[in-house]
Length: 96
Image (cartoon, helix red, strand yellow):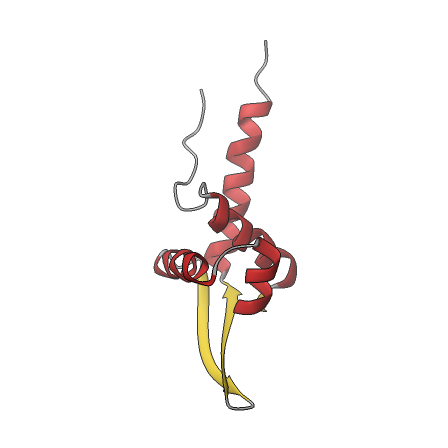
């Protein structure tokens, strides 16, 4: 009856990161840290898990001699997010 929710996206911080990236497509690490109110260390770990799952791409570069990390949602990440929302919706659509 209830569908299993994607364990990668069911984490609050990972879901927040994907939700931000769904709307903006790509974002700098500092922007994600501000939007999610996460610590840099925790955010870094969660971004790595999303990258390993293939849901985001991470590019590291330099801008004005400062390191810059850009996160971009992948097509697979969009599909996973849409399926997660659909599965979550099934919990709300239970007929009594």
